[in-house]
Length: 314
Image (cartoon, rainbow, N blue to C red; front, top):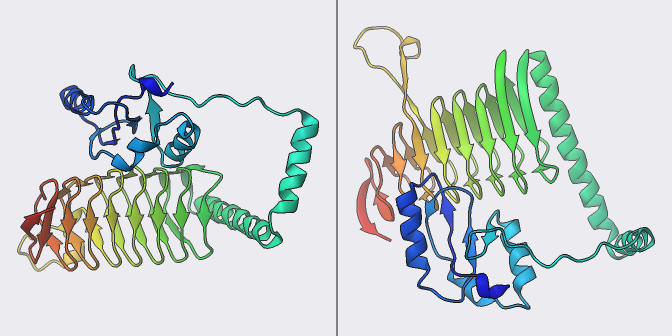
């Protein structure tokens, strides 16, 4: 089975056919390594630390690891690669296995799991209650393994809203959801304490996105966070600005212009940095702490300053 493994790909975004073909051609020169494809997108990086784990003995642990990280293993023909199936035990063995696991798992761990399930159920109940109070038609889909701490807050309004949260996500206390649009959260995302999410348009997290403590994300238009894009504490990412017409009208009463933002795969914004409307952070780009990013950042560039300027390449 391992003879069919040809390359390692990590994909995110929405690439064209030519980019995908070129990526596969480049990686096909690496013989004897595993093929890993993330659904949709262009090649970002080759994971060399997985190359030496493509042996027969390590195949099943490798596939399990890839599944946990939201990747899909494929063979040379791009067909899904599955580990050898283990026959399911009979009813008696299944019950005996559960009893054995219950005995072996420490009591405090079982109590922690029970508390986490209670927190998740409380989060969903409060969210549905708020939606009913405000007359919100809420399309809600949440993974069963969501970890959410008490203290999450919600601001909803009459109309339609969509909230989808994928597997292995973590929401810490104090996170504020101002939900009046569509918010799609991919697998493995982490929202840390006191984060503010203001969504009136469409906000998409591809997966493995970490938003630091006290950060603020404002999405009135389309905002896409590609796979692995992260920001540190107290970062601001907003896609709107007030129009300046020169009149004596209060600023909050003037018009607002929204421009789409894209946070490239594996990009990072340092503490207290800002990303302004219409900006595209390139893949693997870095903005230093305190930077104000007002223009597009090339792939792999490191920017700093107010306004941010390229200082070097990674």
